[in-house]
Image (cartoon, one colour):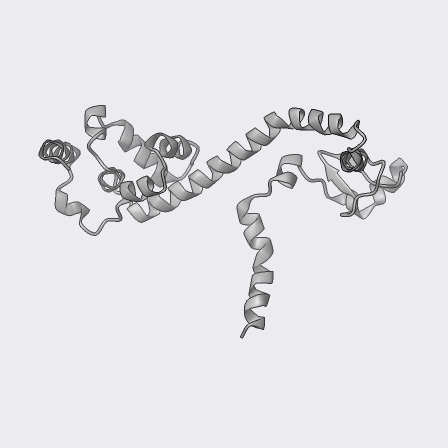
Amino acid sequence: MLASDQTRSKAALRRLGIKPYDLIGVPPLSEIFRELRWTKAQILDSLAYSEEVEVRAFLEKYRSIPQRDLDSLSFEAIAVAASINPKKLLGEVMLAMREHSVNMVKLIAITSHPDVMKKTVEKALTLDGTKDRDTLHTMLGALPSNKGTTFINKFFASGTRMDASEEADAPEAQEMVDDLDFVFPDCSEIQESIHPLRQKLLDTGK
């Protein structure tokens, strides 16, 4: 850091009410974010969706700082000034970035799905489109699914036709799943579902 930058940084810390020794032993959040190639804009955009008290306090403090000082202040300095544990903030940033990434994946999939479906149909209409035709038939219920009956957005798709009373009594009819959550399950749900398998493998290896 150049001498002029150090001078501006010390002045910004002083206006923030933080002394350099207040940051001794504090996790270097700004360096961690740079190594992960997370830009300041990405982090702030992700945190904006969080309802955690610590995150709201951090953002409130951040927005109260003049831009000239923000350019010289680290994330950890602002966290300390907001009386927030930097380790707690790091965890919240990780969760917020994960949620942001999941939402972006969903948006990309949703907005691209019409084009993908169009390409699938175009391929299905060719001589080599056997797999695409089978995929479409399975989606529409003309062919049975290898995974059994599935409800997506309350749309019933199966290999056999049922009347209204049979559909209501079918075990599969007791559980409806949202299409987005079905295709893109939450990361925490995936971890919870595989935990018994992981534990079983650990026990077997003893």
